[in-house]
Length: 233
Image (tube, rainbow, N blue to C red; front, side, top):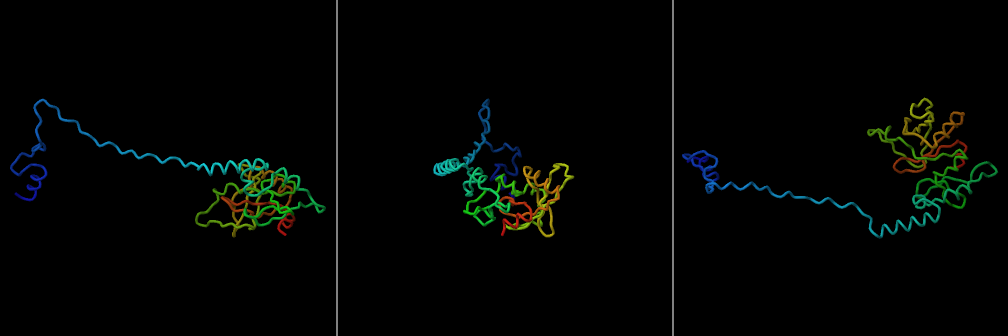
């Protein structure tokens, strides 16, 4: 008996001289008794991980912080950043004899912030700043202009330029933000402030920009050259 015959005899119960019936060697069933159905192994079910839940201590801390922010008339984000409430900022943003606001751009934990003489910080989103032609915002639409092969790196205090796009089919008030060397478009002034910025540019007013904070996308201030010199002196 060769190797193949030995293999069949050992594992299949079939020798060279025996029938090649695949059922040969299997135990026979009593006449009339049906074969047992095949049984498949039970599937293994892996339980899904439970969603992340804040601990009781974290939840209590956040609720306490939220109450403190509300008591101060501020949002949680503004409270964390150390900003004074918008209503308080509005009463303090009064022009001096020179027509300029009592503000400077100074370094803070947030980046560069509008700072009052007593050290209080004014949120860059405060709309009252527009009365001094100061417009600060998060650059929008950056995802459309990012170049993975040549990513731009921003820094606080970096100069940026504005470019009016009066023929923009999506927004007649569109104002692009330009940065880098060579200069290229990185995004736009957000829609809320674009109207005011566009009106100034259409009226012939020169405007300059500066990166003031670095987060998911840069926060930029756009204003007149004279005001920017006042804020950064």
